[in-house]
View 1: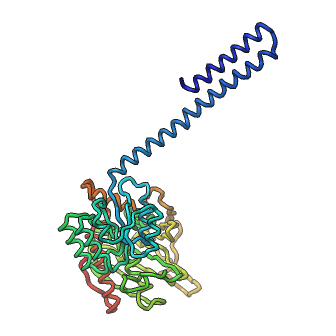
View 2: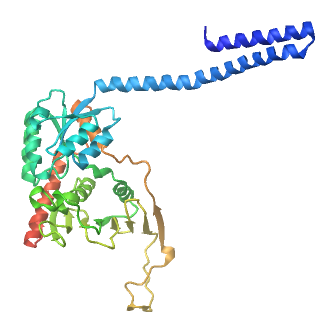
View 3: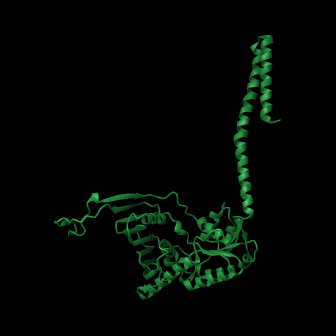
Length: 427
């Protein structure tokens, strides 16, 4: 019998006994203990029933969810990581609880990173070859320093693994072309973690442009700047693919080329500075021109104590500015053209002007911009595309050919900076 029902019956029995005693003896002293006992059992049965109905059901639901997740786990694709540094750790963190890919193990040349992986419960392979020969591994994440990306990606593809490679995918476009050729020959899926296509500041800017708030856009300025220099490690070493163009530039260039995927880049000009790190570029400015489209200006600095806005976009009918990654920004746009010019010269503290006189305040409107809460900005967007492509149910979020266009712009930027020239392109 259910325990709740048993307690109810006991309670009723005790209440009945108390009533009988009261009727026969007319004594409250005798009947009250029976009545209290009966009330206790009835009350406890109600509490117990509520507990079973609420917490019991919640526990059962939780068990069902866990069972469903475990069933999915059987069909998950297994990921092996080569190079368990900072970004690989971020991949591992975000993939916890993801029901399409599970991290099985890692290989790294650093014993400290191997120890970190072991503490996370991951398999630590004794060699790269051991990881690649494990038949349980479906996908390989390449997250080493940049100079060995090509070698490891090709090795993984040749072992029959699908591959996701951290950015920058290679040192130059020619290396990436080799990887793409092997991926086509082996029939395996290859992609690049250009994950900043979902950054909220970029998505917010793009939405305003595509909504036509600015009219025809003729210039976009994209800036990421800091003042603390560069962290120690590969970023400071040219032979490892260091420098800001390959570190941050690859993201910002990719964002603009993703936004204007249908337009060729016809010219590239880049100026690089080595302010504190003589071996690599710790600051750069790049200008890329889109055919029948806007000019994109990309600026990255590690020695800027007063930074530029994250985005400054100019259109024929308005201007957009987004200050930072928190998406604090605004659009100011024209409501009507001011055709009439005042006859008088406007005096400013810089002297007289007519051309730069302020607009009539009634001729413009200001639209405040805010963080877009509906944007899904994480690495799982890239993994969803990868799994969809492997299963044949969808397309990659980042296609190798898109990454190749970016690398060709970067090649042109290095050439431009070296020769101090505008490089004509057809990318």
